[in-house]
Image 1 (tube, rainbow, N blue to C red):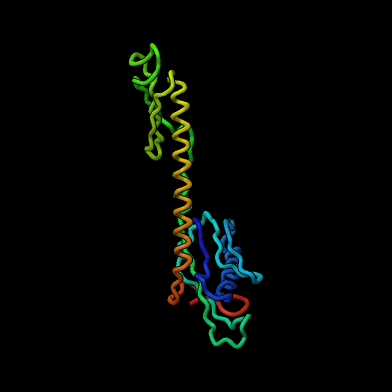
Image 2 (cartoon, helix red, strand yellow):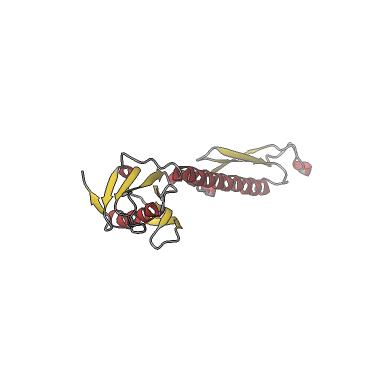
Length: 199
């Protein structure tokens, strides 16, 4: 599971809240790994951060509220700062390509093949079993070469699908970064020490 922690284009106080929440999560989620981060110009501040974990963190989805006097603008009247926590399924963004997961079918090829045309099954269809993606190759003179060509084409298609899935995930995360909803927080923290308030 991936967790995106975002300031939602909020002011520097929200960026600081992202950093403080990130630190708080380290104790709560021992296997947490930071996948990416967009740091702010101020120390300890982040516009957003993405972390990965194998734990169930569905309870974190939503808005986190931080109640504190601004450390950057002491006379500022506002004391409530909000950040967004969005979850994304990590398993969906990568399809592994393993030759053992490919099924081959052979057929008679009508292409160039000299004496073997329409006599020997030199044409090859390769099917990636987990996704159902299939390709054919008939241009080579032997079944062995057509298998290699089909396997290479299949690998290219799966690789492109993985790139497309990653791009879509990135785009979805960026859209979510800009959709911060204030109010009805799933968690509330207080003070410079970022102490969690339990209701």
